[in-house]
Length: 359
Image 1 (cartoon, rainbow, N blue to C red):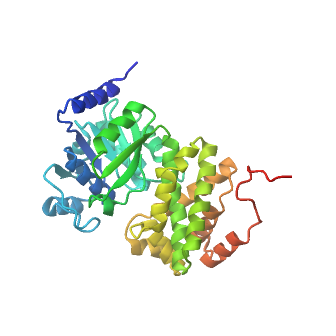
Image 2 (cartoon, rainbow, N blue to C red):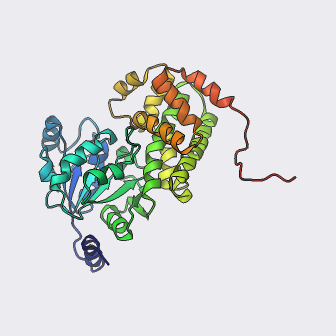
Image 3 (cartoon, one colour):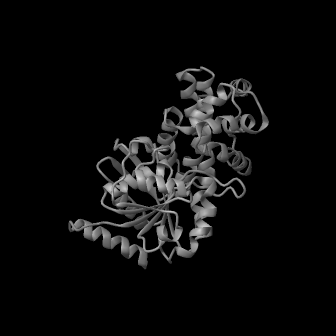
């Protein structure tokens, strides 16, 4: 049985294949750098976008300047984008809603949205994180608060600073239903924004959240003055930790080897745009976690996902030494150099226990 929502998506595909206008009305919940970059992209794709923020000063600036001077300077926003502080206006009579608020505000914002979301409305999560108190991924939080919604995820190695300037980027649209994933793919795809689809929502969410924890470690190594060898080791072994946990939880190995696993981990650990790497860098230079976050001046998602990652590792009996040491640094006052020494002097192991040696 094809649902009403799927019929709607199929209708858009048919119209597009006939060369007809495929404009959609989209509510963008969140006016941070990622929300603004995606609004720019969607407007350029021919869609009508309404951006919501709870901050009146932010919305006033966006209306007057047509640019987010603080978080994404230089990216000019066209007339197809409107701005509001009224959540109902951003949600009502929309074809889909994009959730771009920081992960720590996802549940609260979703609960406030619930009265304005009709049955079957698509909500696309583009934030990254895990809730510390429940250990739930963001899509599950949204579904708990808005049970009548259809929920999908859009995630990958995509820094807002590059997306907002039209630099070629690849990303993944994940949903349980193929029609839903393909609808998101259709809406967001452009000549500079290539969207793949995936049914592995859990794997995509876990990779997105946990790579931020590893990126903190990579930044700490940079702050200590370590080199490329150290960075490569952290990325590779960090991916091994994320994959072990993700597969134990039901995610797919292919996901962690792809854009939302390896790809997102590489860019977050290496990029100058990465707030998690920058915060880790400052900690490596001796600042506390709070001092580092204050200097970055943006939400550092890895700090909030670190405890959840450690708790999930304990729950599923998975060894995650990098995540464990990051937690000790963040919350127990452990010196970064001491954490590095402990990682380097752990018991000797085979890289892949499942590969046998000859007798």
